[in-house]
Image (cartoon, rainbow, N blue to C red; front, side):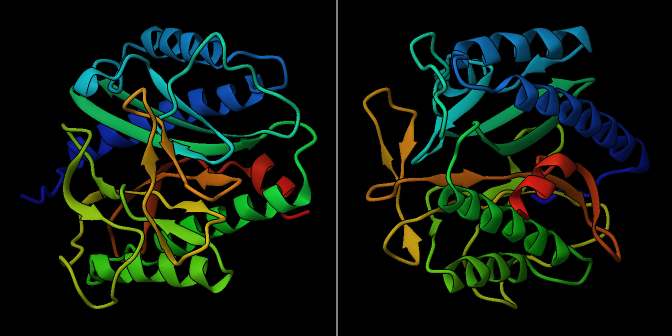
Length: 262
């Protein structure tokens, strides 16, 4: 069932999204060469606790950490580890979720570790632009397929792959609510977007060899790798459906946007 949020629920979702966005931004500032991904995870858990929240990822279907840290061709669900040390030239995707005051927040971003080359920066730029294009379609009266189609067409037009295994989603009291919001599809199809819905739009992009790409899950049962790719990027925003889209929180920050535009 697709849930329409009340004014009070929207206020809580906005508050949580803004708080989580601030934590995610702090993590991007901490992500640099020589840092272990486990260190980022511990900081995220502590910062979430300090604002009265709890990580929604930790324990979800057995997931062992508070955030996902996916490096280079890993698309999503990379498990933080003391052995995963960030290196110059890496591309790091951070996915983070929180429950606070009975409502969830869920955001993702991708970070350039110093020295990353222009090719990798371009992949990130296309993924970031795809997020903005998808968000633009999240208007009352549109359909989910309009969001999905816009993202796919943009990414495929640059010869890049859209990941099919994972999708955007509604969010509220549960982290994953209806409707699902794929990053591929046909315009004019799917559920109608109505005022008061809150969606997570989250393009996952890789430099694969096909328009649509299925990931390979590694032996840890979580880390999703884009086969044949060298780099992947993932951005996620929480959007309130209205006459014009209202972004409650986003993983695309102004400093990143300026860097990617170089």
